[in-house]
Length: 190
Image 1 (cartoon, helix red, strand yellow):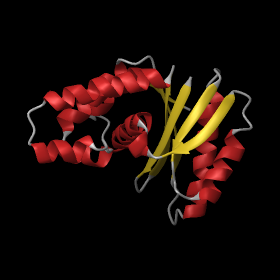
Image 2 (image 1 turned 120 degrees about the vertical axis):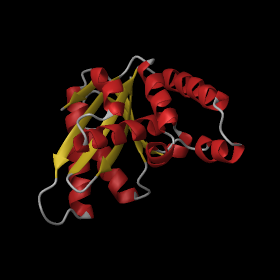
Image 3 (image 1 turned 135 degrees about the horizontal axis):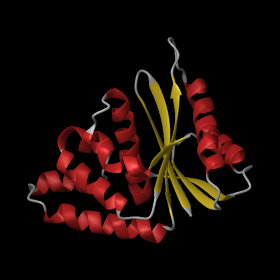
Image 4 (image 1 turned 135 degrees about the vertical axis):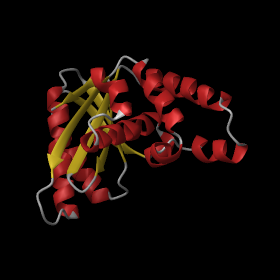
């Protein structure tokens, strides 16, 4: 099993989300199918090129909701589970040190929930000392086979989980969020 991990936040919440799938092959196949669907959509070549490089949630949420829905539907075709953990920010300052501490704590919650042996791929922070803290802490779980940071540009699973993070974050702002209704049966909060 592979767990792809990303995080998101707004003024009130800090959320870490994991997409648990049976294999990298299942993610790669879903990504390939999704890209085929996007490729057949009637979009101007410049727009298609802009979004085709990397399917970031910030772009899809604002400008390409149809594509976001297609992505979520494709994710549902994979045997998966979406697991997230959330920190409610206290009033005041949420600095980088607190964010790093909460990220590790929330990721530990997710990994503790999973019973299967897993390989973990998390979105790179390009901050070696923090990434090392993540690896050291999470590696202590007996079910963790490996854990590594990867760039979302190179990793379709991280692009998928980036979009799932935004869906969950948006659901906290709007309980009638139409994206969340698509995935709600696969979501577990820990």
